Length: 125
Image (cartoon, rainbow, N blue to C red; front, top):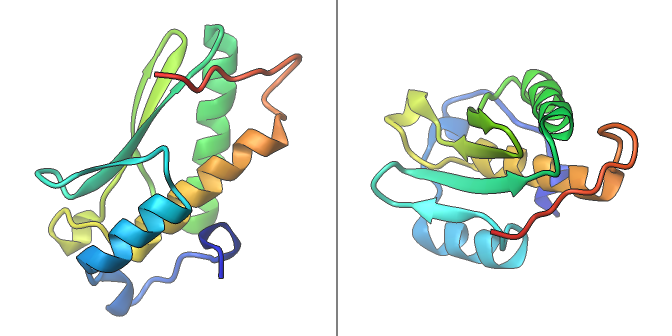
């Protein structure tokens, strides 16, 4: 099943770190624009936008997903870009399945395009 079709679960199993093979496979096949930071035990992606309004519309959409999934990212917000970083603090800052599920939900926002008038993300580094 695709990660974007899954929902976060909140139990002991959900706080188990994802094994290396599963992580690498999911990142390469479903989350290819996300980078894994081994030191932080996190996945991250930088999203770029044409202005502050579109950045904040994206941030609000991410907040909606985070609340719906009850799993919240660290966000770095600035004019024209937002860095989204997921790790599971309850698992000692390890990468867990909920982190990858939420990353996929955020990636799904790209095809939606409902962040305001003429939303066109510039997703290049």
